[in-house]
Length: 301
Image (cartoon, rainbow, N blue to C red; front, side, top):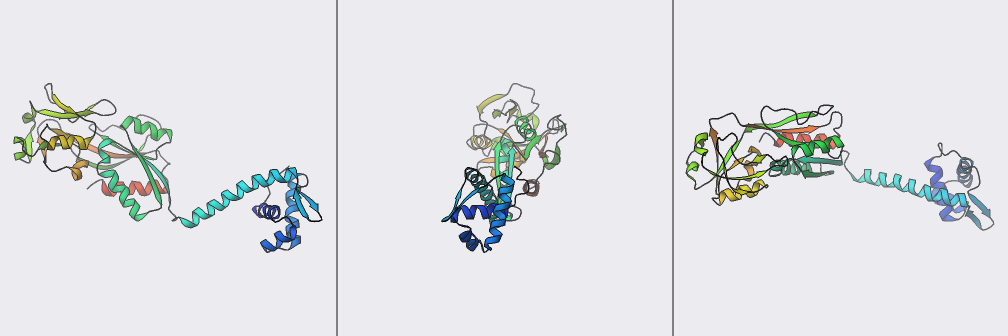
């Protein structure tokens, strides 16, 4: 048996003959001559190495081999037809892309980029999930994510040491900010000195790699943690309620609630933060490229 040269036309003819019950009816349905239908059936029987149809005076009946071929042909033809229907009903650049993002990127950056992509390319489906940088990078290398948005602090090392090195694009780079209650004494100025942060109550939480997030880095004292929360918006609402201070990634500026004053901090080491987009070399599909461009357009804002 050799089905390598069997055509889709022959399979469609065979399917029609099996449904109609006679070569004549199948030919009429397809707009073929009866001899053309007979030739297609003969080509299939040569490939199968035996008869697929039992010819009878009242029509045709499938042999055991014919039943096997019909079952398989139906699957193949349905898949081909489904592909045709899908392609006819979707934009040329439709597809799917899987995105991973670190916690604060979900506050404004990722939703804005996904919304922009939906407006310009509605046929693209984006699925996403939050995670810490190590988790996201492992998923990227395992092939379960196409793009990841991660954060980086000085000295701005690559997200991992794996091979091949990840492709990286800087979406934004800005200084870390401080969120204080609008009624707090530190809210009176646009910037505060790092020394003024001593003795303050903090709202903090642990990231996925167990690093304390929310306390200003490098303070030379044991910090008083008044509240812990992983969710950044929860931290900001606790600040608005006057419960303490927390650091603020610049990416969350668009979602700062009323009652919170955002200030810069003078003194101490530079606390720059980068938002990076990462992907595997040679693995960026067209939908992923379009999402990457949308993230780039939103990132610097």
